[in-house]
Length: 50
Image (cartoon, rainbow, N blue to C red):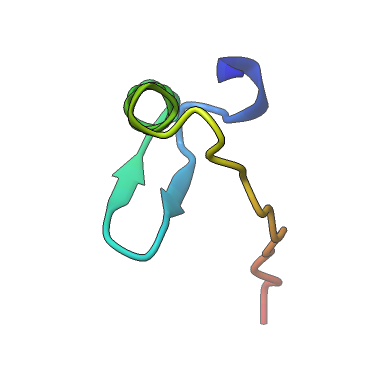
């Protein structure tokens, strides 16, 4: 899972914002421990230079 998120990643859900691949992995580990059926709904967002 950690390879899917580079170190500079920023990610958030309804209640929490997480920065960096280690933070994302920690968050998902907590969620999957608490809610085994937790699923990711991934939406890719990119920022285009202006």
